[in-house]
Every structure is written in structure tokens, then in C-alpha cells.
Length: 554
Image (cartoon, rainbow, N blue to C red; front, side, top):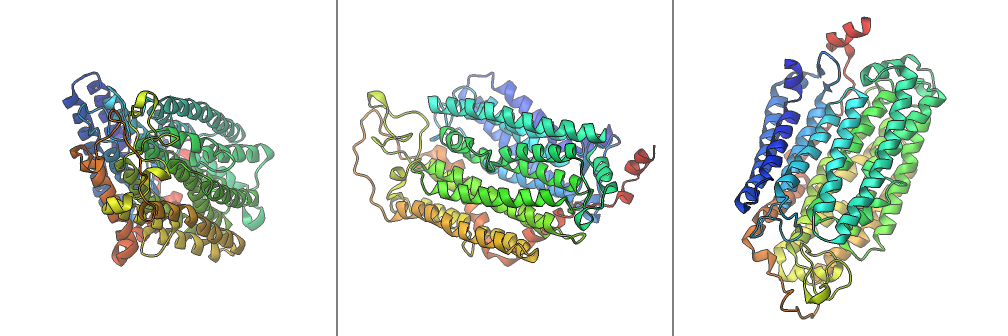
């Protein structure tokens, strides 16, 4: 039990903090609601610092896996990297959701009413779900972690603002999420049925014993093929991968902007972590997977990036643009996984390190883009989410969402315009930003594996994406601000001058700093690249785990 506590202390800290936040949510005092935000940020900061400290001096740095006596949890550098990344981005997401209005019920883009404590508690539980997926060595624990990362987000979407579109988005997301859970359970059940095991490490050894296919890849039975395909489809929903991407546009638009920022990162990273672990298992403890798995990854990558970018060109709501952008970025990261599984050389994990680098960069630059939208007010009389509602009143918790909302705002608020420009340039993958190196590493990994056609399609898609990202930047700087008259009852305060927006501006500033730091400063780029390469080494020899070896002998 002591070893389990030592391994899962970050998850336990987040769980205890979430329970405290739920209890504080009972209070109706504004001061208590503000306290819940402080507690959430301090908890994530403590976990982030603690993980950095424990990872720097532990057995992980010597390349050893750490497992509990029951082998449900197995942590390598990969798991620590994911936890540190999620905790760091989680701090920024919590700052975006900071309750800065007078009643501490929300901010310019979000209004959860009296449920501020519950909202932050759900956020911590969702982040903790990703932690569990990163730590899991048991398919049951992995499934629970994936669902724990997702279920709180269904509630967060529905309560994020008192508008019908938010509740509609929450219901859509919930029912489609239930379908994805059914697909995953279907796959896990057949994986268990064909192996009689739930321990992922031992299942990988079962597959390794059947090696003999192309490139000495494991040979799977028909039921095992079905299991793998169903699992990949279930994970595809979490990653917003075509064809299970349909929910993204409506849900991203309907949710409050801070929740949209969270949706673009937390469920996505949980899906990618689960996918990576299952690929490693199917490869028999290596990345040499059956050929059909690589083909599926290539097809999904091409469809996802192409559909995401083409549909992104057709949108008028900026949050929908970022929804399809998020889909396209999932396609880019699948390029890295395709390169990873295309390798027939033992120990070639360049594709995985590229994906891990890209996940870090994507999480940072996305926060900046959504934070800028939160700091800009919506315009009156505009069709869609930003307009004045019935009776000449402004809908609650509505910040900039349309191109009309941001028109001319770059000249009016230069710092915010520059922050959005940096975020968009990084999302395109232009030089001097972290996004450039993220795409560069993905493309290099694919080139090294001879996936020339996939590289060409990736580059074309990156060029297509520039159209809608540059449209955002040009709207902020080149278009004139709409000449509209605010009804007296609807006219908002200038959110850029509100004291309550400091945490949001801090999150935007930190994100822009991160984008430029990992795109301009060579030592910082090399540090993140080194960490991602170290985290990609997940093929730990069984000899370093005597407890696992003895269990297998029994």
C-alpha cells in the first residue's frame, strides 16, 4: 500500500483538493468562491513542483520502471512527462476560469452561478483522470482514467454559462461520449477475452510470443483485430479524430470559452496517451505493430487533418474555427504515431518524441488564443452568440466569438492583438514559435520512415490552415471596428480594464512567453526536446522489474 501511495500521490492530492472544493461549494459567499479558485491553482502548482522534484531525483532518471505490487500502476518517464505537462497547462486553464466578476460566479466568458467550487473541483478531477491514464498498467484502470477525464467535462460544458446553447452542447457531448465509451468497452472486452488478462504489460508479452508477421510483428487473431480497431475508434472520439469528430464544432461553440480551451487539450491528451499505450501493447512491447494498424493511423491522419482544415475555412464563429483547428492538429499528431509504428528498427521512437513535443506546444499556444477571445467583448446586433438578445439585453457570459467581434480590436488593444498573432502564427507552424519546431519534428520523423506522401499532405494542410488563422489576425488589425450602437442595458464594461481580468491576462502572457521561449531560445528548445525524447523511451526491459518477473513466473 505504501508503494501505491508513493506512486499515486499526485492523483491523491488532486482528489483530496477536489473534495474540499466540493465542500466549499456549499457556501454562498463570494469570498469563499474566490477562495476555491486560489485553492485550485495552488494545488496544481504544488503538484507541478512536486512532480518536477520527484522526477529529477528518482529511479526514473536511470531508465527504470516503477510498479506497485499488484502491477495496476506502472510509471516510466513517459508517465511523469505527461503528468508534468498536464499540471502545467492545468494551471493556465484554471487561470482562464478565474471568477473575476463582483459575485465571483465567473468572468467575461463564463458564469457558473453559485457552482464555482464545484466547477474547479470537476476541473481537478478531469486532470486527475489524465494522470491515471498515464500511470495505468491495467485496462480497467485505463478505462476509468479516460472516463474520469471526460465525464466532468460533460457537466462543465452544461453549467459553463446560463444559455440554452451550452446545455444543448453538454447533452450532445454526453450522449456521443457514451457511445465512445461503449466502443472502448467493446474493444477492452475482446482484448481481455482473447488473452485472459487485464495487465497491459503481460498482454504485451502475450502478443510478443505471437511475433512472426511482417517485420516480425505480432500476428493477431480476428477477435484481437476487432478489439484493436474498436479501441482506436473509442480513442479517436477523445482526440476529435475523423470520423468521430462531429461533436467538436457544436460543443466548442456552445461551451464557455475557458471550458472550450480545456476541451481542446484534456480529453485530447487522454486519448493520445491511451492510444500510445495500446500501440505499445499491440506491438508486443515494441512499436513493431501489425501492418493494418499503421495503415489505419495513416488513413485517419490524412482524413483528420484534411477535413479539419477544409471545414475550418467555412466557419464564421471563431470558436468553431478553433474546433476544426483542433481536429486538424490531431491529424498532425497522428503523423507522428504513423511514423512511430512504421519503423522496423528496435528502439526507434522519434515519432513518439515528436508527438510529445507537439502536445506540449499545442497546450501552451491554445491557451493564448482562447484567453485573448475572453478579454475582448462581443459586439451588439451580430447574429450568433455575440449578439444582443431579446429585450435589448446582452446574454450573460458572452465574450468575443465571431469575426465581427474581433474586427479592429488589434489596433484598439495592441497587446492582445499581438498575443493572438503569436498564437495563430504558432498554430500555423511559422518559424520562431514552438509550433514550427512541433511540425518540424513530426515531418522529420515521417521523412525518416519514408512516408513521403504523408509529409506532402501534411505540408499542404499546414498551408491551408494559414488561411483561417491569418483571417483571424487580419480581422484584428486590418478590418475596421463595426460602427454599432450599444443599447444602454447591454453595454459591457471594457474587459481589458477590469481588475478581475488579471488572472486571464497572466495566463495569456505566460502562454505567449512559452510559445516564444520554445521557439526562439535554443537552450529551452533543446531542453523540451530532450525531455520529450527521454519520455519516449517507454520500452523498459523486464529485468528491472523483479516484482513483475516473479509474478509471471508464478
